[in-house]
Every structure is written in C-alpha cells, then in structure tokens.
Amino acid sequence: MEMIVNKVAESGIITLNLEDFLPKQIMVFDLKPFLFMELILKEKEYRAALLAHDWEVYRGKEVVLTCTADAIIPVWAYMLATSYLQAVTSQVIMGNETQAKKDFLISNLRQIDAKAYENQRVVIKGCGEIPIPEEAYACITLLLRPYVKSLMYGEPCSTVPIYKKKVLV
Image (cartoon, rainbow, N blue to C red; front, side, top):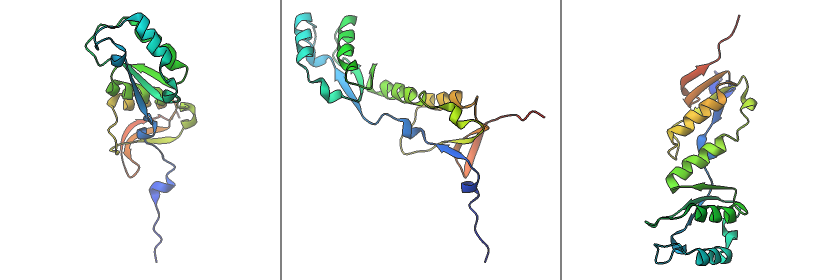
C-alpha cells in the first residue's frame, strides 16, 4: 500500500489569518447622551456627567469615540472624554465603528514582530469567515516583505505568489 504524503504540511509554510488580528470587542462611547436636547454641549453639565460616568465598563476594551447627534462638538469635549477613556481602555479611536475596526486591525497588525518571519515562506489566508479590509493586506505586505523568503496569498494548497526573495549567486 502506498503512503499518502501531505506535502502542504511538510512544506514549512506559515499561514497567517488576518481575522486573528481583528479587535475582540469594540465598544462605542457616544457623546450624544451627554448633550442637552441632543444638540448642545453645556460644559459644566458635561464635565459633571463624565465625572459620574462608570468608566470601568470600558476596561481593557477597544473604544470608538463618536457623536451620532448632528451637533457641533468643540474639540476639547473629545479630548476630555479621551482623557477619561485612556485610563481604562486598551485603545481609543475617534470616528465611526466601521473605520475604527479597520484602524484597530491595522494597529494590531503593526504589533507583529516581522523579524520572527525572517526567511520563512508565509501565506496570508484569504477567503475567511469575516471580510478583511484591503488596507490590512497592504499593511501585512509592507510589514513582512523585507523579511520573508516568500509571501503568498490564499490557502497553502492553492496560493497566489506575491513576493519571492531573489537569491544572490
């Protein structure tokens, strides 16, 4: 009987799934409830409300700071909320939730020790369960290309070559 050999398993290819770098839980901190009639920011009341707010619910979480009301918010109001959030959160990003997910993902990717992949064959997994923004694929390419032996996209059994280090003779 002939032995079946899994050539993919023996190839030494490292697969990176960018889904693993998505933020685990994003919380939204919306200034809207802190506005008078959801339109006007009154400094004294705003400061008092922030002081009384339970900030512990944000501990260790990634937080999106936003205002969903159609109101003019002074810059210092965002700064003040950020000051409180920074004491308990892992990260704060200003904007909408969709953009923040991208920003948190890119931030998490930039934490990778790219040197750990030096002279390795790396496949960036495609077609996963969760859509990954194109910016993340560009980011991981920029991070890994200077170090890897080869960079591919797809699945180990069916890849698209992206980069291969030239061997100097």
